[in-house]
Length: 124
Image (tube, rainbow, N blue to C red; front, side, top):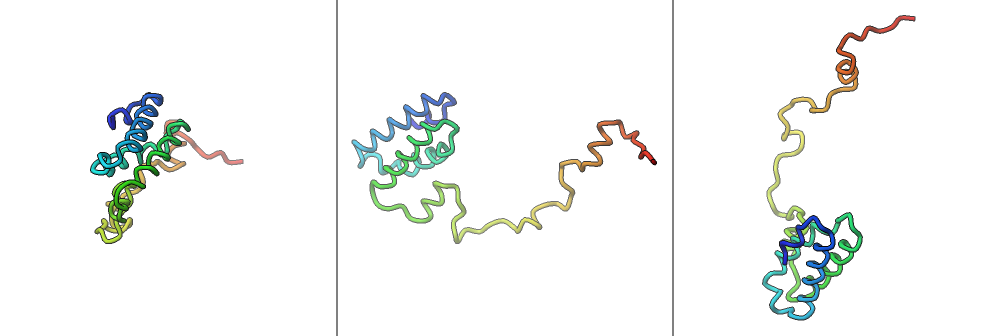
């Protein structure tokens, strides 16, 4: 069922989400062991471009979070792709780079490349 949520066809995706919602409402106890996996997959659909998919996703996430024991902060962070408070993080942004300039060319070099670099200023 979870595999169909990754489908590009929005109607297939919505049917899969609705099926998970129905299963959760009917067989709560059997869903509890899989709820973290299901929530991780559903989290990626929260921002889907199709409104019915987004709405079904939010309703299903809400229902799944209500069943079983409450999720702790670490589990919620894992589901929502957020950093855990006590987790080690990489070096600050300044130290991450290799000191090189941005890959985006400057405005001046873009203009030069558009005209073959043969631009001469016009004196008036």
